[in-house]
Amino acid sequence: MTKKVIPITYMPNFVASPDGVFDRLWNELDWIRHDKVPRREYYCNAFKKPYTYGTPPYERTYQPQTWHPLIIALQDLLLQKVGTPFEVCFLNGYENQSDQLGWHSDNSPEMDDNRPIAIISLGVEREIWFREIPPPRITRDVVPYPTAKLKLEHGSLCLMEPGMQDTHQHQIPKSSFMCGERISLTFRGYVK
Image (cartoon, rainbow, N blue to C red; front, side, top):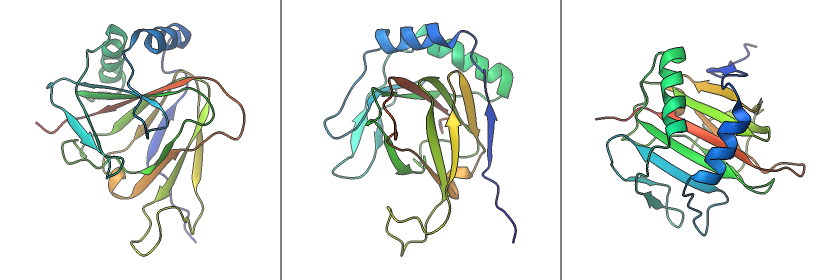
């Protein structure tokens, strides 16, 4: 039997001095916390276009907010190290072990599926889980096959290959242990 490989690249220690970057972003951004969303959120888009995500009753529209200088610095670092330009950054702020992000694919039509997705993690280590997209007859919360798991370390980069959103889903589940704050910065390409 052939073991399928999850199409990602993981780089620990991608961000120099991640403590200071975390502290500034956690304290200086105008985070939004929607009633039904178990985490803080912050959205930037170089084209100043709003972004609608989710399905009812969880559908919500984000207005682009100001690019913090540290987000721009990380965007420049990605261009230098990965060689891909990213026009969008979506940040999630996890306050404790109960904050989470459910199973999903980043498959919005305005996002460029021909470029990778870059996730920079800051703060407490949390796992990201991956699985192949279940067939339509399987309910979304039932996983009939093994899940790949990866611990996202403070200052790390997880790079999801182009096209991965067509074949795989991912999630940040609730943590099984008490933990503090974490920020993920998800950089995407935008279809112009």
